[in-house]
Length: 318
Image (cartoon, rainbow, N blue to C red; front, side, top):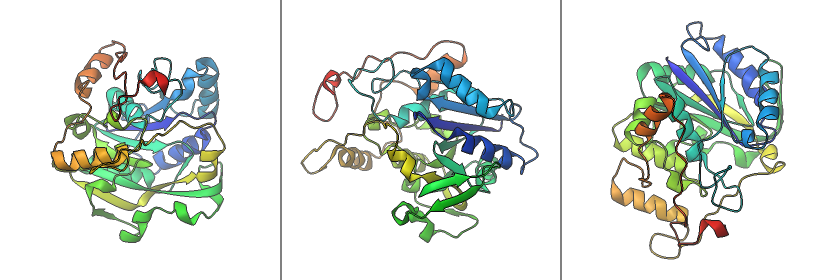
């Protein structure tokens, strides 16, 4: 398998039709790629927890038999879903992306977030990264009132200047250039599967907080993997829809002190001091989890941590 494409969502209405139509358009530009043969599509969907039958029917109706895909829940997690230890649902993107790494059969894994429109060149950019074995940072800009045509093409939007990807002004509009490893942002990126396993995937210490994306990039760069950016490989997200649906909680706790003032700063400073390529969360080895689930075993159900690492607060109170 050459490529795994992973789509992540937790929303009631993820606008999956935008992604599906755009993916079909993009696949048509690369005749050597065939979904189900050398290209795998995985939907990692927290919406399955709210009602699996209805959600599967919703996605199946959108796909309408046009391409094969795998539709899975995020792996069990202490922050969200039926095995959560918290009172509320928290943001856990690292957990969702590690689910995709565990199930990926492609040598290279490309990610797209929900509420996203795939822009022309999105797939060719990630496929070039797969062919040449580098980590690719794609571009993500957020606008308001996004509309999309039947071919998954951006049809209209209201500009949202604060949502313009800040990296765009530093890279050429076309072509691939080297960049800092901390330029890896979560909206869309791709990575060789072996690179992800070498650094133990995304660090789930960041779940409930955020920042797992640049942490991942920094560790990949330290491990010797080339990190590049492509100004013509991107997505457009609808910023307005981020705020009109129930969202998961992000909690960046105050942590006064030399590494503060917040928990996100503490994690970044610890990472920068350590020089490690491995995750700070050492409760599992992603490569071993992957071997288990691909052999037919279920994902393990975590029972730790029971407290938040920053201040010892029981998760049952959060």
